[in-house]
Length: 194
Ligand code: GTP
Ligand code: MN
Ligand code: MN
Ligand code: MN
Ligand code: MN
Image (cartoon, rainbow, N blue to C red; front, side):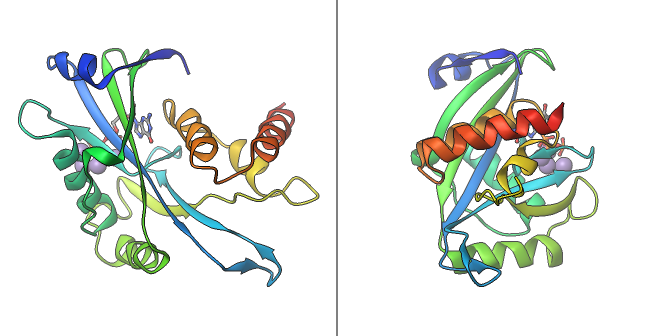
């Protein structure tokens, strides 16, 4: 996805443009798939109304609210839970090429497994957007099975805007997947898409 990264300062100087904030929420976990494959971390994304994968979050109005307050408001709508977001959770800003003039701010925040499980429940039982703008929360499989199942198949799906790049960058930066496993998963995903 084309476009370019810009600084928070440059982003906030462009108040005439549209801004959106999205967040990667994650937790450590000791749970095992099939009782043997450690899942290690739980990373949340969502299936959007348009059939694309993306992160929870949405449009904010920096002239009326802080980026973080706007993101918290979107999370209340889409997750049905209060998630406090601070500037410490800010990661990057991106000037999207399509739609033009949209500035995309990205956040990541580590939470406990029990809080994450509560958010998953609230997303179904409490979120006003459930079944409408958001079709469901989903976890990202971070492992790769021998047949290529897991992260490679997940990455072969279709993602909104630059959310796939946001995911890959975060998995690397937060060390949720080793650089080698990530590189191999991206390569496998590429083969699957062809
Ligand atoms: P409404 O409440 O219907 O207005 O939607 P929203 O405020 O929740 O906005 P949405 O989450 O769709 O985000 C606004 C725009 O940001 C989208 O049209 C996409 O172009 C882009 N976008 C959506 N999700 C993501 C994401 O996870 N990452 C990135 N980089 N961009 C996204
Ligand atoms: Mn949204
Ligand atoms: Mn929304
Ligand atoms: Mn909105
Ligand atoms: Mn909305």
